Image (cartoon, rainbow over all chains, first blue to last red; front, side, top):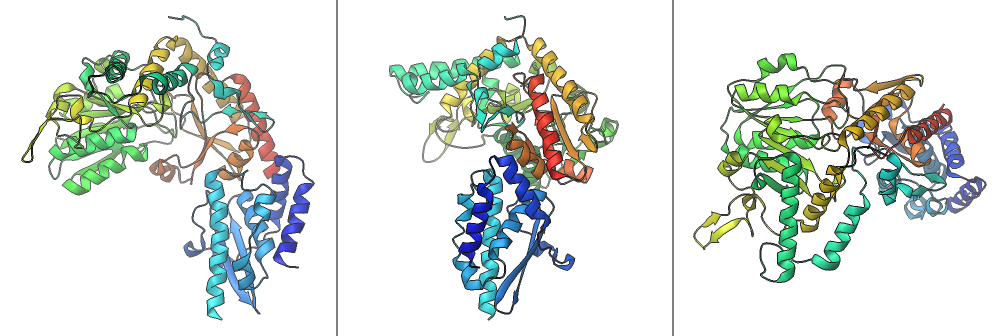
Amino acid sequence: MTIEEKEKELIDSFAIYEDWMEKYEYIIELGKDLPLIAEDYKKKENIIKGCQSTVWLHAEKKDDKVVFTADADAIIAKGIIALLIDVLSNETPEAIMNAKLEFISAIGLQEHLSPTRSNGLVAMVKQMKMYAIALNMKQ
Amino acid sequence: MMMNFSVDDIRAQFPILKTKIGKYPLVYFDNGATSQKPQVVIDCIDQYYSAENANIHRGVHYLSQLSTTNYENARKTIQGYLNAEKSEEIIFTKGTTDGINLIAQSFGRMLNAGDEILITEMEHHSNIVPWQMVAQERGLVVKYIPINEAGELRLELLDELLTDRTKIVSVSHVSNALGTINPVEKIIKAAHVKGAKVVIDAAQSLQHFKVDVQALACDFMVFSGHKLFGPTGVGILYGKADLLNAMPPYQGGGDMIKTVSMKETTYNDLPHKFEAGTPNIVGGIGLGKAIEWLSGLDLEAIQAHENDLLAYATKELEAIPNLKIYGTAAQKSSTISFLINGTHPYDIGTLLNQQGIAVRTGHHCTQPIMDFFEIPGTIRVSFSFYNTRGEIDLFINALKKALAMLS
């Protein structure tokens, strides 16, 4: 599946929920399936700055794809990073660097996160793209 | 004076309280961060820009004189409310932070290496960092009065911490993170025995109860307009005239001078010496209006109502399993900080927001307090007298729903 196809799938699954409490219940559920970061990688350098909670993110290259793992001390932050990993993990660095991630606004995630939290979301996306650029250069 | 109190009448004066967040009515429990504004203050700001706008202390024309009169009348209203001896003891600032920086940078310039500044472990960063900055510049020593598990100052250590080198004691009247009301009268008396001057950070107290600066005998008091039902970007520094007269100016510019030549400048008298540049004119006038409005209320009845909200919310929160309240001082304002074991404040804050409840999460700009309790932050609800028991019920139900979702 391409990134756009995965985004489309997420937009469809969010569309069935009527109110935001249900959407958050879904985000919380997604957090439970987050591919967890190895404890060794839970260090200061892997903390994403700009989030109200602590979010750790790690990336490595398997074959020619980038694989992300993460964890967070808050459940909703965990769900949001899980959403992003769902879309961006197992993709090539180029695809990640070029991803528009229109699903974020399509499911209304951005407008339902306060500016500080939205900054956290922006910081997560930025960090994932930075990893993709770094791993691309290593080639 | 209206010698009673109807929360419905009060609420009707705050248009923003009718806001809906999605399908939920707004429950505004973030009053510690800023208060909402009554219609009279909003109208006053509108009136200023519609009919009174001109620069002050300058023009001979009608609008400039009107604007100047209104601005100076606001100063007098504030002087009266605080019972300051003279109107020139009331300095307009940008807010509490600005006021503390002014004292630190001006009074601090008169201190010598080795002199001591005594603050407390429960201060807001704005009452820590300015002192650390001037201490670094001038070789001063910053000391802290520690707190106990209840979130009270350990005043049994005060005599030991106050020395002959202590020149200034700066302490919050009410803790923004814990709600503790500090016995500032005691601290002021002890400091004065040692010849130290005392700054009271009243950012979290004046919206809850009245303070008489002469009876309290503090040397300085600072607060923000926006937490006191007034506009943002304006605040007050009260200082005893003899102290303010002895202090060097903090910022240079227009309005604060008597004469300027290329060689030297002579400074204006109080209060203008500390008010360089065009001030926040509408802010000052709006703050005067807010305080005039507040003076018309029955402050005893208001305090009784807030104490009832505090007691009711405390009882309701304590009934929730695994919930711990941080700040259990005997004397508290209507602020409650708490954590629920196994949940993150960010999750609770997010899910409360989805249900129309505005609370504050995080360290509340008081990282030393968080270090003391070894926690990253708390969820804080802070009430004003326009809040109701019914809103507390909505909040408790929303909190229970959030907990169910997170479990």
